[in-house]
Length: 299
Ligand code: GDP
Image (cartoon, rainbow, N blue to C red):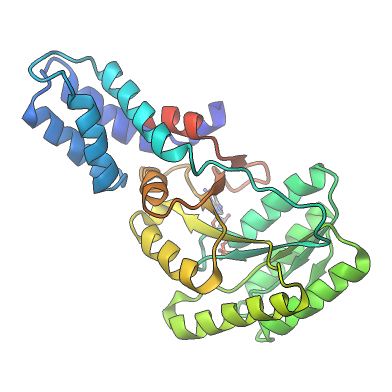
């Protein structure tokens, strides 16, 4: 909780600080409520959620004094209501051997880092792992995954830069089966610049996996960078169509004032949110908890 709270400082000071500024020594009226709505929209919560919160705050309190703390409590309760249905842990089905996790998202969103962090968690639970360097487009991504693999003590299946990622996925699943690995995590490329190519590549990876195991990939995790704000919505839309996303991980919630985007995403897509990234370190991946997040962001 302390880390989450610290990580979300900038988001919570934008929202909580805004609320304090608006409601200190002022009555609740159309003006203050409009200012509240502005603060919430600025913080990327989205118009739908912002107006829902404004309505909840305004209900039965027009013309009265309201303490900033009370506004924050109402906000936290409303945000929690939006987030509660999507706060769902990632369940690794032990009957699938291996359980195949495909990580998707645009370059720089934190895919490779999240694979590293998630692998460390799964390893600590006693699971055996294999990593596949499926972002064959960037040499740095392959190297980075190898470093994580060494650090965690998990084998990394990799080919040279430019190799076919679907072929690599095939190899990785074959090897993971032979080794009796519990979880296979597959990295992918995320060049949104060439959307058609990206789609074709991801679709091919999924197709190859499915051919080997009709249920695979068992989880398709979309990694979204909180600092991109509203852009996260279009990324969720695109990857949802291409890769059949089953859950979200939101990274870089530390040091951004745009943490509210997670609330907008939840309201729009209703996709499960499994984890949030609050730093670059191996321990900086937290299971997503609706109440904690709502309280932290309310300031
Ligand atoms: P990829 O291109 O999607 O694989 O992204 P990377 O995993 O290479 O991450 C891009 C950058 O974001 C790296 O410098 C990471 O250390 C950093 N990063 C990833 N997750 C987080 C996070 O939760 N918080 C912060 N502050 N940085 C992160």
